[in-house]
Length: 102
Image 1: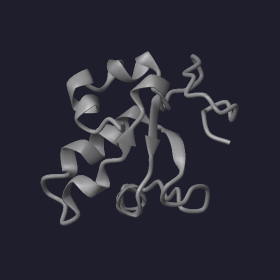
Image 2: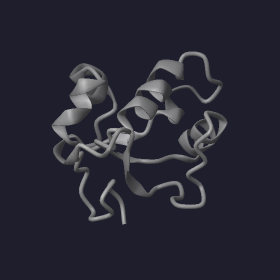
Image 3: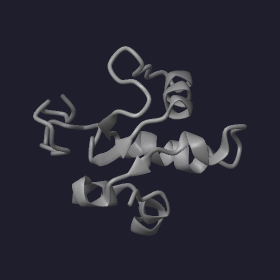
């Protein structure tokens, strides 16, 4: 189950220093990118899974998309209605909106 508290919600308690606030659908390209950054999530999630991502890792993917061969595919689709407002501590809302799912 996703979420820092493994309760299915992108809650961000004070103990969550990773700010797992971004509700997103991961792609194979994102999982490969994350593994290269030192956090291999492939043992926990697979492409197409909805997951609460660390705001910083989502932002890293967003910023790296212009340098990566996979381009925009490394940036997971965001579900704004399920993303915790604490994501805005790290990410501009307009950047999240660019990759918002419908």
